[in-house]
Length: 231
Image (cartoon, rainbow, N blue to C red; front, side):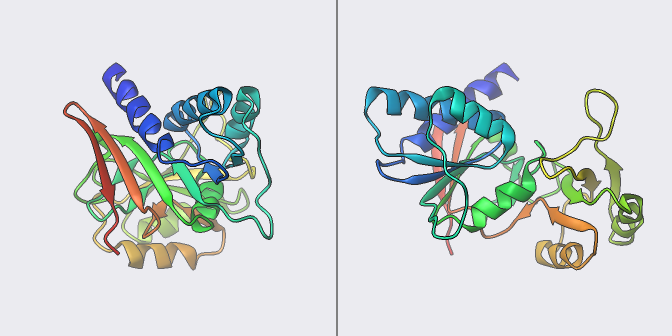
């Protein structure tokens, strides 16, 4: 795990190297993003970067960015996000992603869809030939009727469980929704599964991030790789 943490840091710092002064930057959520925030704050403090404005994907990221002195703005009409830096739980060869292990998937996807460029920083353990092989699919659901979604996910071929917090209570998103972690095994049809989840009332978002990543920075034992989407 310690090695993976160092690889996350390397990937995050490499992603920050792609930023330029004057950009509006989406700031993702999770352990890898913490390394990116620290690297970005250092560049702002040194003057290497200037006039950077961040859009936070979670309350946790917002608090950390403000603590580090990174200027923030709201995601509102007229705000154009040049680049978002985020992590992922699983990445396939076409740079499709599973995200949401940290619980910020709804806001992360909103920001990703509003970004001209989506840069994902990961350690090499996150690479997978098929999404669902290594990681369950996070699904954000309304508290009302959440148990009905367990049966629906089972009808789709998956098995879901309600995510628990460290206190033993249901984990809550920033939007005060519940999270289900659904195990479908290797997912045969990403788009088909996404459509069926999106059609279901009470399912507010899923962790399939399809055709959104433009770049993936991968850190491994042999160094860094910069993968780019071919689409």
